[in-house]
Amino acid sequence: MNYLLVAAGLILLLAGAEFMVRGAVALARRLGVSPMVIGLTIVAYGTTAPEFMVSLEAALAGLPAIAVGNVVGSNIANILLILGTAGLIAPILCRPGALHRDGAIVVGVSLLFVGFARYGTIAAWQGALMVAILFAVTGIYYWTERREGAAAAHARETEEVHHLPRTYGLTLVFLVGGLAGVILGSHLLLEGAVSVARALGVSEAVIGLTLVAIGTSLPELATAVVAAYRRHPELALGNVLGANMFNILGVMGTVSLVTRLEVPTKIIDFDLWVMLGVTMFFVAWMIFTRRLGRPMAVAFLAVYGAYVAVQYLAMPGAAVS
Image 1 (cartoon, rainbow, N blue to C red):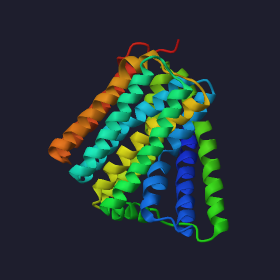
Image 2 (cartoon, rainbow, N blue to C red; image 1 turned 180 degrees about the horizontal axis):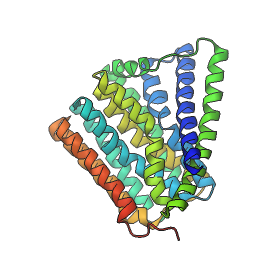
Image 3 (tube, rainbow, N blue to C red; image 1 turned 60 degrees about the vertical axis):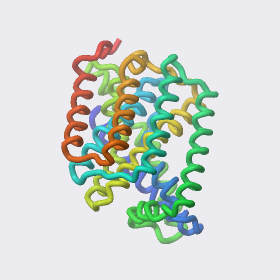
């Protein structure tokens, strides 16, 4: 029954996020919003709706280990699992200029988050600062890419969103129905995940870092696989870097504005540093080599498998207290 709740929650969560993005893209097009703005905001941030709703629901339910673990685990999975999978399909190449900017931003916000979280709590003022930085970064992206004439890449992102509603009424149905699916799905996923954690005898932090994190990262995985298959691997790279930035600034920032977040000791002592180390290594690797080929993609997947194994087999404090 617990696994059925998890499965039902994931299906509702992912389907709801997909419908919500389609409705939002359709509305933006009808309002005359440029494809670049749609790609920078709705498409880029829409895939993180599952992380946002699950972390918010967990925090409000008094489960900070899942709320924080979901974001930390998702950021680790986005790089090792998702880019590793995309890199197996097609080598990921990058534009040096864009990567220097995006990589520096992702590393910077990761360092900021580690600095906040290592003291054990994330307060409202810290959340407000993270949300303010998110708005500033989005503005920088818009003006920089507009000046550089890079709208084509974001236009291509919006073109990947198919089967849009064709009337305002249907658009509203997509938006409201998608939001309802995300909310209900996050509730079912959270309830099932907590039950699974107790049944397996592992901590809620471990479940948040693995089961919940992988589940909420599925939209990014789907986007990356499709982009790699269609020989647009740079979209997979941009989507993951954008998602990791939004997970920290948007998800953790907004959730900590709603309620003070307690960060579990296990995450402070181990997982935060894994997230930071993986992020810094990946950015440095891409800056110096400008590509993620199949050998490194295999290495990323192997490291992620080892990380998940450590969570369940070797980490102290894995048992439920």
